[in-house]
Image (cartoon, rainbow, N blue to C red; front, side):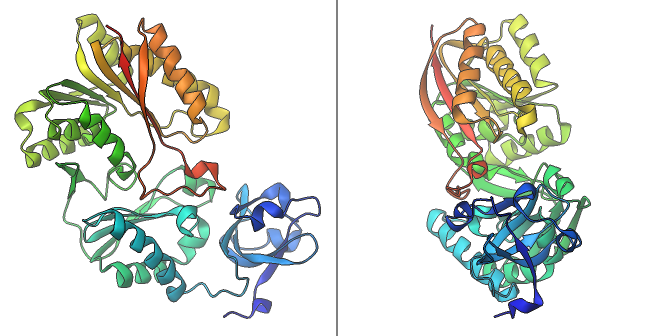
Length: 400
């Protein structure tokens, strides 16, 4: 235990509602905290005891005066010692869930607040782990975190992926480093009967999107004998799963040459090369040209980047999702299927569903919503934090 007199104390404003914190909400916003000179002088990532307006301790938090989320709850025990043993306990709990869910060590091991490590993402690719320390406290305590990660999981290589919007909001620099071990190149990842190639050093995010695993599997159920179009494909997400499910052919569309090369390598490793093809270009432009060409597919799936990463971008983002649905619907053969995805936490399920339905209608089609999917169980949701439930996938059967 740590003597809490060695820590700073930060306090909620008198009118701030401490009940949300007591009931599990993990964040304190800047306008909820007393931001006197002493608090604002704390270093980004400093540990402090959080008190309510009546000076009753609520727990141990990490503070970043530069962030709109000025404090994040680390432990309900205000005297907890944040060291390698503390990290090992959190990681062991996270590992126990994934080991029960998956028969091979390819999954998201830590999903930030939902796994008790706010702002921390860890994806596991067999013997390689990629850590995203997206909060200042995790950056400052990266050494004991990585030591615990190696001890608990037995991974032989750890990569720090220090990129992304979240680090910028925390005032952190961008960098990608191999912290331990060696990574020779893209890592083969077996998933849903296919082999994906994850570029853990230079790819998007950690190199692969494990969150779509269950949605890939559902899409594959619709793919037997089908002509499949996978738009915003990245490294072949839905296309390779569809080919494993018996698709006649699959075409991946993406703006990234590097991603499409990895998708082709994955298709080759899976034995799907003869049925797989790629088309590089802006997804909107490619879909417009395909419609002019009269192209038709039995299954079209669009998995774009987050068009609404914040509330300020919500309206523009919803218009973009509507446009995706409109363009994609025109490419679906009569009686075929359309899958539409959103990873924007600012757009809730109802808003995304309505935008998708409007777009399908504007594309001159009508459809049945047959399935709604979310992130897989290795991306658990913290019930008190809506932002942790960001991914939505809608599958429609369109009219003839």
